[in-house]
Image 1 (cartoon, each protein chain N blue to C red):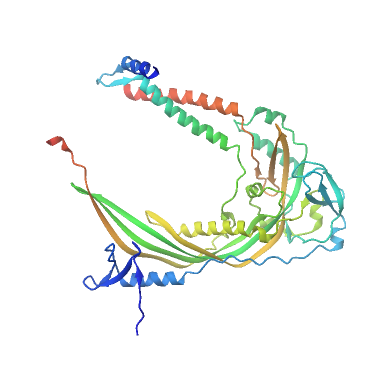
Image 2 (image 1 turned 180 degrees about the horizontal axis):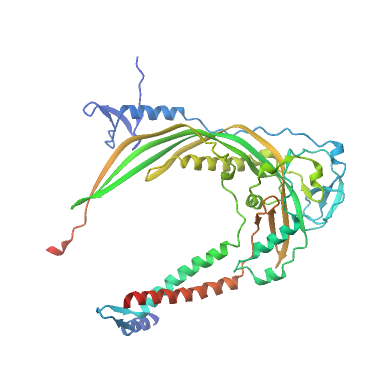
Amino acid sequence: MGDLFEYKCPCCGGAISFNSTAQKMKCPYCGTEFEMETLKAMDEELKAEQPESMEWDMPDGDTFKEDETAHMRVYTCQSCGGEIVGDENLGSSRCPYCDSTIVMKGMFAGDLKPDYVIPFKIDRNAAKEGLGRHLKGKRLLPKVFKDENHIDEIKGLYVPFWMFDSKADANARYDATRVKRWSDARYEYTETSYYSVSRAGNLLFENVPADGSSKMDDDLMESVEPFDFKGAVPFQTAYLAGYLADKYDVTAEENVDRVNARIKKSTEEVFRNTVQGYDTVNTVNCNVRLQGGKVKYVLCPVWILNTTWKGEKYVFAMNGQTGKFVGNLPLDKGAYRRWLFGLTGLYTVIAFLISLLFFVI
Amino acid sequence: MFLQAFSSLTAVSTIVNAGGDTYNIPIHILIALVIGFIVAFLTVSGMKAKLKSVEKRENAQEYVKQDSLRLSTKSDRFLYVKKDRREKPQNNNNR
């Protein structure tokens, strides 16, 4: 007994039957004809599609040994309650997150030891200069913010990051069209050719970072990215001397959804870019499966600068490895209005003169 | 009242060039004002956007290993074609 096949029309979704006159598969609803082989191949592709799966091997990790933490102390913020790790001679006495006073809580002990640390390459002065450059050329920044803005303390902070490595397998299907247009004396013609496009394969992601500190704003940390992992070295407590370090309080598991979303989006973009030569492309589905996902615990260098202006707190961050500087700035509403009305007047005169010139010519 | 004043102004503030075309000054000032405001708004929005440098990252493009993409399936399958014919609008001036 032969297999009973039922195919659905890719055009309208109706059940297709074999048309003996046309010797082709024909949809009784929309009248579109298909080659039998085309439908069979499409059906096989659909059956081969695999569901999404995004699993990670979480780190067991080493913990600190007693002799490694002999000179390390835990400090706690009086205001936000944040815990910071520093050496016993810590110069800074203010919390890198809220700028309140921090006090020594006790010896640092136990806890998961970072796998790697990316040492600071940019020094304190460069961070200060970075702020100057960041404020330059911003016409809508309040002048007093520029002039009166005092950064009391610039803190070098090792921020805990989880870095995710994985191979992403994907299979994607797209509906695509090519459109041809021409006309004669009476009619305009449009010929639309419909294609089913399939892509499957894999690509590698390396060191996708995710902020492991709940006190550090995720968007701020994603904005100072990327960190170059080539500069990472196996972790040693000696690198922390003179800097603050935060302990992770957001686990790798808690970051998985954010990392998966970023990896999925990039995988979709990379696969989508392989579909070329069409007028329209519509993604039907793109399933991503991760293989051999591994996570590392890495401390990354960030210079943090806090300032308060008109009762509002502004936090700036500079990538301590690359020098990338980020931080939102306040808007001078008066300057905004002046520029808007001034430029409106200027452009109005220009537009009027141009229209007059065209009329005269 | 304003519209009435504007329409009486437009009636008198016109110039005529050598080809006999008329140029209505108030209407052209109004159009220039709208264009001027739109261009100024876009320019100032660009200045405002420069104040914001913190934003969520939606993808992980920088972390894709260079040349790591391997495609095991690459199929572009033709399904069907649809033709559409539309009559051109006819000029009825010849009646």
